[in-house]
Amino acid sequence: MADTDHRQLARDSLFLMAEVRLVGSASEYRVKVRNLSAGGMMAEGPMTVQRGSQIEVNLRNIGWVQGVVAWIQDNRFGIALINEIDPKLARAPLVIGEGTPRFVKPPISTHNTGPLRKV
Image 1 (tube, rainbow, N blue to C red):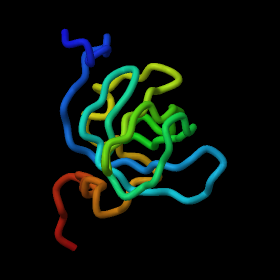
Image 2: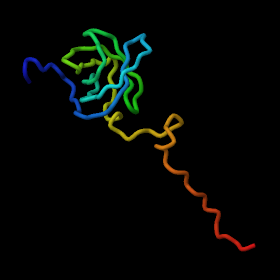
Image 3: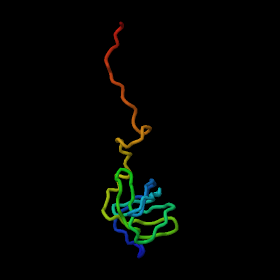
Image 4: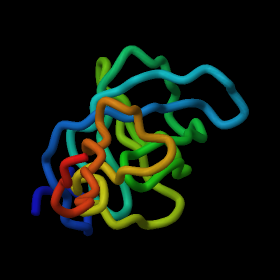
């Protein structure tokens, strides 16, 4: 392990979108999640943050989680999560529920009424 690499948790390289906001702010920014582990993530996007800022991230299939900005480089920044998550949940297919848009939901199955009779 290099001197500059202090991460102890395995991380998955991936590409998914997430919403990010500063704690206490209503403004949300859409960012690309470049890698994700149980204790942190790297995000890329137009959001301006400072090291040490408290932040909330809405991850697919997980929901809103809190973290702290650990580092910044150009338009990428690292987030150390307050509580560990299961990163495999974010990779899983979308969970279909009440909040899911109609175009994502599976078609309604037809009900088999049995043979038709002539009238």
